[in-house]
Length: 138
Image 1: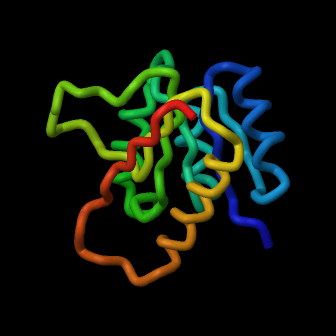
Image 2: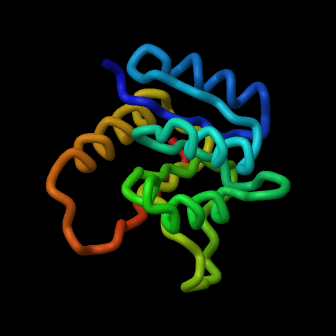
């Protein structure tokens, strides 16, 4: 059975591109907003969340925060894919995704990163907080 990836992206074109790109390796569900993504995740928790950062309403950081606060979702790896570099304002209140990829991302790199996070997730969990990996434009 393929791992479940929830894609949260407000751009229809990008959302469908990601869904088509990932559907060979993953069972993809898509949402067009943070609110819709959270609702879908609570109804059927995915194995990984792939989210845009800049969205109206609930942005990627707020969606990540909600995942980290929700007991049924807090163990799920979160990957940000954004056209913007990570915020460097060092705001300690911002949740930290498991990976942060800057668009455009090479498809092979994105797929490999998702597989790596899912494999790490199936390993014994350490007490350490997740560490964001910043992958620059490729």
